[in-house]
Image 1 (cartoon, helix red, strand yellow):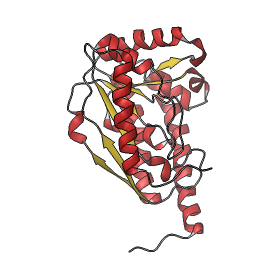
Image 2: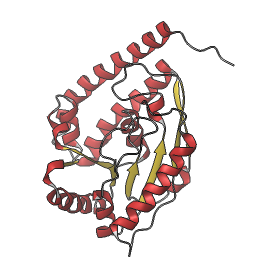
Image 3: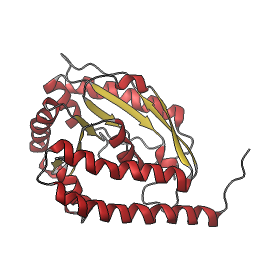
Length: 248
């Protein structure tokens, strides 16, 4: 059994990762502005190299890898992804697993320097969470457009990052989009928050467990039924792969 790294080593490796992460974000965001005149596929192809670089560097610098079960379930042209949200890791990983993709995110994120610049170029669905029903209507309208263009729509149904072991409230918007369009939902569970905690500087070495469910067929189903099927599957897998108990 390999010896556990010391605290000094963890800090040094994490610092090395963050140095490249922030540097690459700044550089790629500036360079991405020059892709503005080009079609979406060119802009997306260029910007997606940022996540590819940082996933590679994460494995090299912090010795953090991942194991995927259910990869065969992604064998559909495109659809709606419902993913557990625990850390920043899955925002990198899902960019590489589902291409081309559109993100459903809070519109405030587009105001973040550098990150927001790149995000705008890949045409996200930026919602005002305080808009209530109008936000759901916007998600359906813009989500239908992106799906018809052959893109994946990636949604974190809990709306925000949750610590390991915590089950947040699943929001109806993504399921309403699935009901309106009939596209399949791909549920995804993972325990990335155990290794890359939210607001955490340290990245722990290990193997993130990722579980991808079979497509949930949505034609003829109501949004509440779709949401329950996805939530039940995701949370059952979380019970299997979560090793950390929530803080009290």
